Amino acid sequence: MAIIYTLVNQKGGVGKTTTAINLGAYLGYYGQKVLLVDLDPQANATSCLGINKNDVHSGTYEVLIGRKTIVEPILHNPRFKISLLPSSPALAGAEVELIELDHRDRRMRNALNPVLDRYDYILIDCPPSLSLLTINGLMAAQDGVLIPVQCEYLALEGIGQLVYTLGKVRNSIYPELKIRGVMMTMEDKRTRLSHDVITEVQKFFPDQVFQSTIPRNIRVAEAPSFGQPILFYDENSSGAIGYQLLALELLYGDDKLDKAQIMQQLAGMKEQGRIDDERYQTFINDLG
Ligand SMILES: Nc1ncnc2c1ncn2[C@@H]1O[C@H](COP(=O)(O)OP(=O)(O)O)[C@@H](O)[C@H]1O
Ligand SMILES: [Mg+2]
Image (cartoon, rainbow, N blue to C red; front, side, top):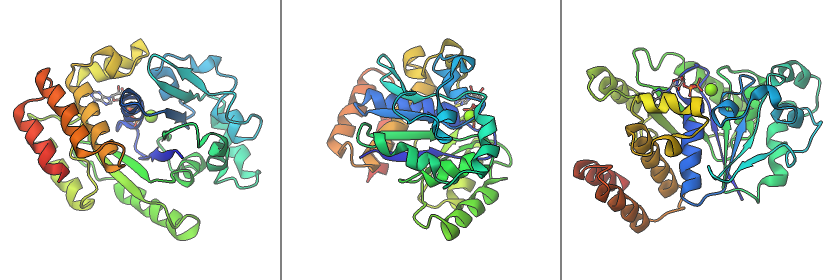
C-alpha cells in the first residue's frame, strides 16, 4: 500500500516541484516504486522530467474529470526509476469543471485507488495556490503533507495562511490530515539569514523540520533543462547530496530502512568523500 505525500505551499518558487522530482528520484534509487503526480497546470514536474507538456493529451486533467482512469496515462521512466502522471495546460480548466462534479474535492484521492498497490510512494506536486486542485492534493495526502520552505527573508509569510487552510480542511472534511514534515530549501550556509530562518521555522513547527536541508545549488537549477533529476545530472553536487540525505531521513522515518542500513549508506557516502565526518556524525546523532 503506497505512502502518499503531497507537496504543498501556496507560495511559488519555494522548491515544491524540485523536491518532488529529486526526492522522488532518490526514493527510486533506494528501491522504492515511486509515482509522481503532477497536479499543477504549469506542468513543471512534467517538463523537468523531459516531457513536453503540450504533447500530453492524457494526464492529470483527463483523470480528474473522469475521462480516463489513472492506469493508462502514467508514464514510466526506467532510467530514473520514477513513474509520472503528467500534467498539461488543460488542467487549468479543471478548476472550473470540477465544481460541477461529484466529490469534487476528493477526485484525486479516488482516482489513485487502482494503483495504490503498485507503488511504495506517491508524491503529489501541487500548484502555487490554495485552489480546488490543491484541496484535491490535500485530500489525497493520506500520509501527510510535505512543506518546502525557502530559506529567505519573510519565509514564514504565507505559512500562517497555509496552516490555517490545513486546519480548515482538517475541521471540515479531512480530520486525519497531518504534516509529515517541513523541508528547508535553497539554504545558503554562508549567510546568517539562512541560519536564522531555519531557527525561526523550527520554532514554528517544533519537531517537524527535517534535519536535512537543501542547499542553494546552481546544478539543481540546471538539471531540469536537461530533463533530469539531479541524481542523474550531477550526483556529486551539494544539491544531490542534500536530496539524498533527505530521502534517507524520510525512509528511516517511514520504517523503510533501519538504522544499520542508514549508517551503511552514510558510511558509503563518507568513503566517497561526499559527506564529511561532521555531517556523518550529526546525521547519526539526530536519528536518535
Ligand atoms: N536547491 C536549489 N538550488 C538552486 N535553485 C533551486 C533549488 N531549488 C529550486 N531551485 C530553483 O528555484 C525555482 C523554483 O523552484 P520550484 O521547485 O519550481 O518551486 P515551486 O514548485 O515551489 O514553484 C526553479 O527555477 C528551481 O530550479
Ligand atoms: Mg512547482
